[in-house]
Length: 255
Image (cartoon, rainbow, N blue to C red):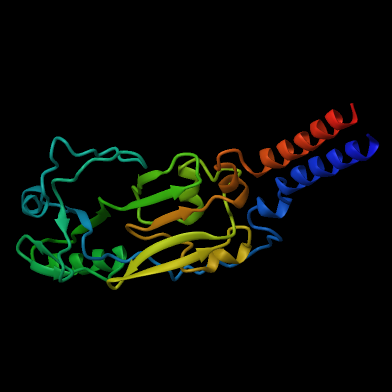
């Protein structure tokens, strides 16, 4: 009987250690020290962006023509989960242009928001004295799927968001999520690109995937333990069941 109990102990230990991952599988930014972030990765406007453009100036009557009235169903107090469809704004068409009052078609695609703001201000100088311009992307959305607490699509009410912030907004990764192989899907110049990210490695903050852009899709894969547990009984239950069956069978024979 001692042999049987030793056998059961070994099986149970194997089950325990099989399902226990090391600390390194869960900790973010390992061996973290001061790291300089690449600040050149700026968000650029692109086809499909719906822009809220506001023009300010000394003469309120003169600037009215440049400002689209805000519709009643538009949410001005936007946050990450506002949702909704924007019925007003300037849509960047497939050629990368918007159609702006008096100024006509203006190419804004591939410009940063700062560059687009300066361009509009310079063009408006013909009609207004010392104009001020603000630009905001109204349909800046990121989708987070997979093994996170609250998967879904989030809206970004400002022009910059990074991967860690996006994961925080959806409640962070589940304990069973793979942290060293997160997939980011992104469209660049009409081409779908894939980035693989290891957030346990501090160096990922200098990846092109650290700062997110419009319509990025993040997929977090579950680890093997969770995938295996989704089977009918799971590998752990099978091992325990086999051990129990062996012990029961031997006890019956010995009796």
